[in-house]
Image (cartoon, rainbow, N blue to C red; front, side, top):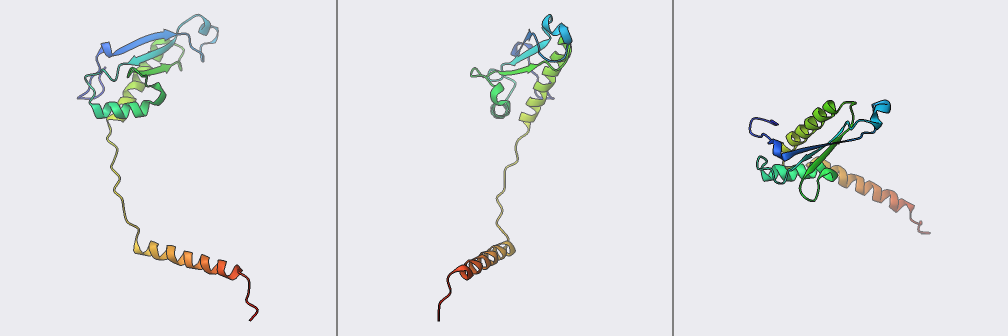
Length: 138
C-alpha cells in the first residue's frame, strides 16, 4: 500500500479480519460478515521513522494496542469490499496526518499598549472597590 513517494507499507504489516456488522444491510447483516477490522503493525514497521510512529500513536488514541498495533474497524458500508477500501483509506489518511510535523510555537511578548490597558483596568477596578468601603464620619 503506497502512502507517498517515500513510504510504502508492505502487505505483511496489514492483517484484515471480517466480522458481522451493525449498521446498514437490513436482514443481510445477520448472515454476512461485512465489517472489516484492519490491523497495522505500526511499531514493527521498518517503513515509518520513529517520530512519525510517536505522532501516529498520539493520533490513534484508543485504537493503539499495547503491542504497538493500530486497529481500525469499519462497518459503514453494506459490502465487504467497500469497507475494506474505506479502512485502507482511513489508515492512509492517519499516516499522512502523522507525517506532518507540528509547527513549533514561538512565544511572543505582550505589547506596551496591552500592558498599559491591563494596568489601567486594574486601577479602575481598585477604585470601584475602594468606593464600596465604609465612609469616614469626618
